[in-house]
Length: 367
Length: 99
Image (cartoon, rainbow over all chains, first blue to last red; front, top):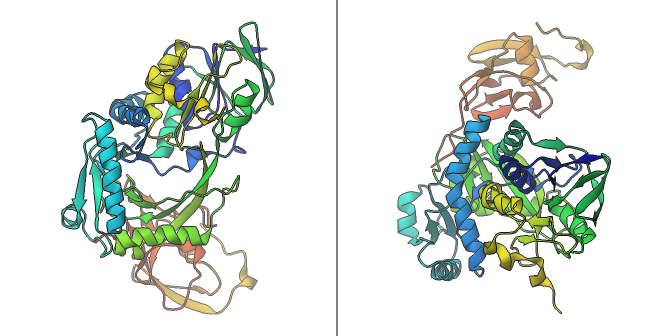
């Protein structure tokens, strides 16, 4: 029987960050990954490290997001030192562009709500067309303005995912791939997992399995309503640098590719693409920057991201036993730094941070 | 060195230009294959490191064979058949897309 101090179910962006954090705190960890048959949100990310628009009506989530974005520079430096992998993290601030007066006024209201709940910790500016045009060249005629926050940034999500695995292994963390968990039981202070790679036992188990989270959490008595939401992305050929800060829907990567997103589609477990949705994404990007019409698209994809009914994370502890944790989020890149740091530290101590107590799954249950 | 092993499948002679040099080959093969057969193994510089690169997978996946064709940058040489009179140039760095 294989054993460990802690088993982390899920080798995606969330599982790998928590596993890295637990291993860095000295636990003997075993990370289980289902393999490439899994729906991997971790390979479909847009790559924003994004604060504005997160937790507009949930101040605790907004604060959690801000804290992770604040931790990101040191986290990226730590990853580069340990693994030699450059996460290409930059924090030049970010823009959300509005294409109508209605959008602009709605956005202003949302930014004011975030600001008012943050006691001054959420700086932002609403920029009219003229102010925006002084920062971005080549804006299309439909652009009326936008919101800017200096807290926003972006990173290379594939480099991040690889660095988390490389760093985890460099620190001695164990990984088991092709290991699908089929059952979890708790007895006498130990979780016993039946997996396609054999049985495994540990006193602590972290369920961070993306779209596999719901059935796994249910095995330990927790109803976590986490379902797939599809997002599609378009990527262009490499272009000379022209955009030095990320926009909600357009960003230029460290290598020069232009990424355009995104969509939110409830289509079950279909991770394909649809031309009409991709055309809509391209059209919105072209309305912001008409010159993008000349850029050649080289790839498009759909990815399924775990989504809860209110779009916020689920951090919880299932009732079976006292060493199980569930973490499921939509924003695995933005939250990677806080998952590897404060969240992993709390889980190592056998608890969840008080900051996220409002994000338990019980909020969805109507009694 | 690359050797032609598929004589029968190809059509009439065509001549295209690579960096100003005329190359005569036959219709029905890709730009990337024609360049390899003509000894041109480095056909672009990557915009990331500046290294010279050339055709690799020849099936549309790796994007190593990017060239400029008739003034349009970043074309996959392995996905485009040669045509008579085509003007092909090395892809040097990234495309210019911005304003």
